[in-house]
Image 1 (cartoon, rainbow, N blue to C red):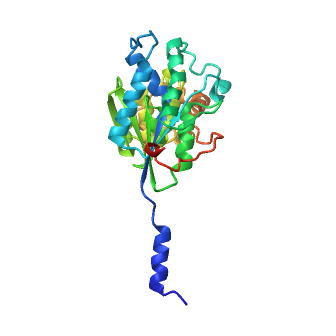
Image 2 (cartoon, rainbow, N blue to C red; image 1 turned 120 degrees about the vertical axis):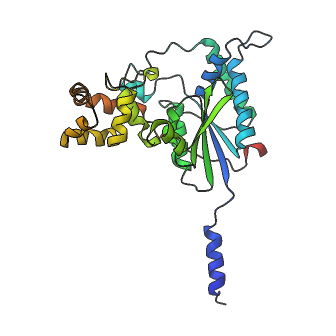
Image 3 (cartoon, rainbow, N blue to C red; image 1 turned 60 degrees about the vertical axis):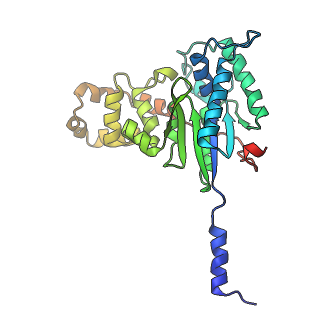
Amino acid sequence: MKASKKTEKKDADKDTQKGPHQKLVLLDSHAILHRAYHALPDFASTKGEPTGALYGLCTMLIKIISDLKPDHIIACFDLPKPTYRHEAYKDYKAGRAKTDDNLVAQLKRARDIFTALHIPIYDKEGFEADDMLGTLVEKLSHRKDIDIIVASGDMDTLQLVRDKQVQVFTLKKGINDTILYDEDAVRARFGFGPELLPDYKGLRGDPSDNIIGIKGIGEKTATTLITTFGSIEQMYKALKKTPEKFKEIGLTDRIIGLLKEGEDEANFSKMLATIRRDAPVDVELPEKPWRES
């Protein structure tokens, strides 16, 4: 018996309906533990074992579960071996002090917490936790039934923000003062969109990671350049075709000279600052919500 047009339409509507909306929280575990360790340096168990980072992690988890009510949680970790960034630039993060042994011990113990809570862990030799986060976002954000929130202790992950579907929940101070960034919030803070944050670092650098940028270009000039021209590639295209525009926005001959001399450094620094979204890992969302695991 031939189906009526009304029945066919109803079946087609069923096929295109979205499933139940889910919320996925991705944890930048190393960044959270690092922030908690320095916020609570004197916490220890009765046996004298350091516990500040673990306490801070658990506090953050409770806040995430309470405030965000996630269906799924995934933890991403750095590994101790060098990454492809270190291979490309031997001085990457060279200014950082060696990780304290007390923090290293807690980084290892944190995995036990995630295992006990049935929270999957992603890491990959040669890649940072940020690259795990970027890859998970890239492979899961096409699903319109999933909202993704990246929970982190630093601002690097803001480049992953996309509208309201991918947001970043980050620490402002200590381990309790948090803020949730969507795309509008990123634009309000920086004056441009999340996709241009690597360009911003490419120009001004990032001392915390020893990314050099262009010597002599600070936050104000970098912001002016990006809001006027867009990406580093677009900026250098304009510099070669219409250099007079750079004087029109108030840049001196000295700054224009620094830009011309620093093109290679800007592009290289942007590469270092860009979170990879193609780490070779298989991404699979758990079938059941984490509370039911």
